[in-house]
Image (cartoon, rainbow, N blue to C red):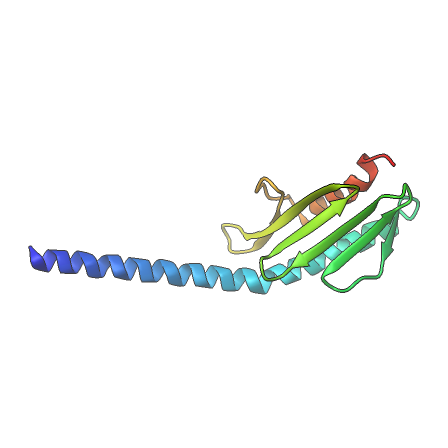
Length: 137
């Protein structure tokens, strides 16, 4: 009986150790990938802004930020917080965040405020730029 209790305790400790190691590796993967996905999102926002100069002006900002001025006097501000792997945004009083998470293939995806993944970086960029258009001045 005692041997079984000891074996069970050791097995539980091993399972916890393995689970902790997996969480650590997942966090490490996310910490490595999220900045690259952010850079891709930032470039996509810049390219989309330049594609529609009638509506958007991309302003020069530090690498961890985006500022896009709408011709309707609405500004979109997005800032990537590397330590928490989120991007916070604001546009004309509306605030929110995008979360960078690992999918089932251990690749980083961008999720909306409800935790739903965007189909692509382009889709996330379109959603953000849409905030400028949707909110009339």
